[in-house]
Image 1 (cartoon, rainbow, N blue to C red):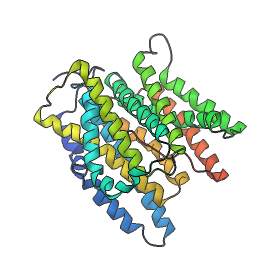
Image 2 (image 1 turned 30 degrees about the horizontal axis):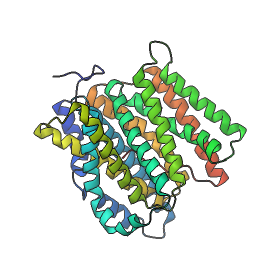
Image 3 (image 1 turned 180 degrees about the vertical axis):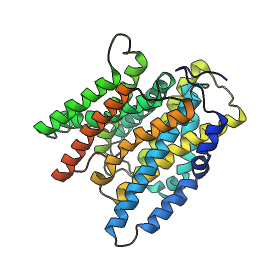
Length: 341
């Protein structure tokens, strides 16, 4: 069996059986849509508590789907070029979203700020590429740890570019959060490798993506998501030019498809979650992603987070939750999750 560049083995047959239930649930364009319909029925009543519970459940399901898709992507890039993953993953995601794209096709004819839309697509595409490139050499949980810092970058960016005020407690929380990043990263001449720097760059790009999305509040979610997939597919095609196309083995086509389906399913679940419950209620649950990522990292590759990573995660999550609670008390919604496409 070929070793992964980070020294870990790809997922064994037993591990595939462990995740087969989730894979089956997300194995086609109608998979997540059926679950979305179920939650829609549950939440159409007047019970606000029930709607919030459904929103939280959908957010947890989204984090599970995103983590699963990231693990699948990490497995794929151990054998195939990153560009090929981006292309086929995006194609699978667009297939899942096709019914919604057709249903809301009129929204694509009146998009606001076309120039900013293009910038957002470019940032999104490079962010996805940087993320999966980092996973080639780093454990999945480590890369996700750096991504958790994106909430801190958003707070700083909102103050610099949007003129939002940061009070002293928030500034302290941001500094503590960055301390958590340093604890997890353990910066030194030996540990400050280029994969770690790429993971941090991906986190910064992800924060920029969320900030730009704030300027595009009138753009439907399906338009934002589909644009991201199209941009990722185009970048993937460009990145494939030097290495060329590698025809996947029959079984590997499933992994490519699952990477895209899981991402699209997560996007659908996130958007529905934010419609059922206030963002201040459901957004903090994005931090469960590190737990799911650690679990899938262990199942797929036998990866276990280091003690420094775990300590850094706790510090980052604590700072992020404090910022979310401050936003909630102030009556401001935390930034909407806009996951990789």
